[in-house]
Length: 255
Ligand code: CAA
Image (cartoon, rainbow, N blue to C red; front, side):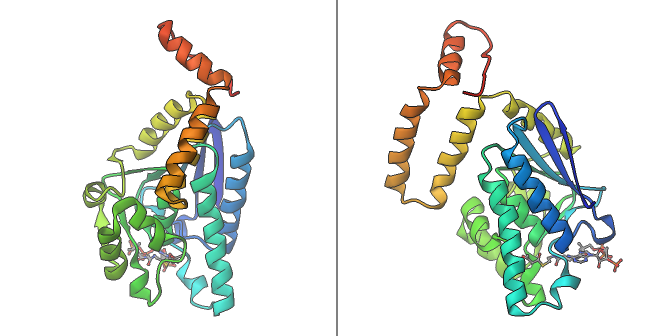
């Protein structure tokens, strides 16, 4: 088993555990990751998901280069699609996903972090999209998500050059939200906070934020206005608003 899932108080932690390859993802690890993420997406008892790598050195050092070196174009397409399935689950599951980047996050590792909703980095983290140096390009969403998160200029800089950046630079360009050590602790702190919020409102917030990925701006604003109104039918919205007025902590029931 190279993907370990633990859960406590509504927060699931997914740890990629393949230290002999700096947690690089081979077929069985990536398949396992995709499958575990699918289960967590459907598990209502899980309110937030944290993704990290085992050990001190790496988050994920990328797709497994040894495996990729033997792929023909058809196989490479399947490999790309599998990475995309894992990324889309992180990006769209109806609960927040947080990357705790505890070391190298290169290539596919950086791309999985980019698919998460929030990213924190250890001071020793190194991030980048080095694919160009292998004669390929990012294949698990990096060419699309990096620009959306950091802007087109920063994305082209990193994707064209393949250079590796440290945590400070990642923070400066908005690739991570904060630098913290131990980074897993920081991620858990945020995950616990988010797990205490209304899952109804939080999943809608995520879906609406994600609309920027697909819809035109006017359409996104219109959908936001409609869904905002519909949310007032939920018990959680009534409870949250009433609790504020009554100066007490809300008790969200998830409806
Ligand atoms: N795939 C397969 N094996 C990997 C790997 C990867 N991405 N990254 C590291 N490893 C393996 C190394 O081969 C080595 O194994 P052996 O001891 O059996 O040779 C072991 O992990 C330890 O690595 P190093 O000895 O290289 O450790 P280091 O500290 O000297 O260097 C590193 C660390 C800078 C991260 C270096 O390992 C490295 O450059 N790795 C490759 C990073 C990379 O290019 N990632 C992008 C992959 S392409 C991709 O992800 C495509 C995509 O978009 C889907």
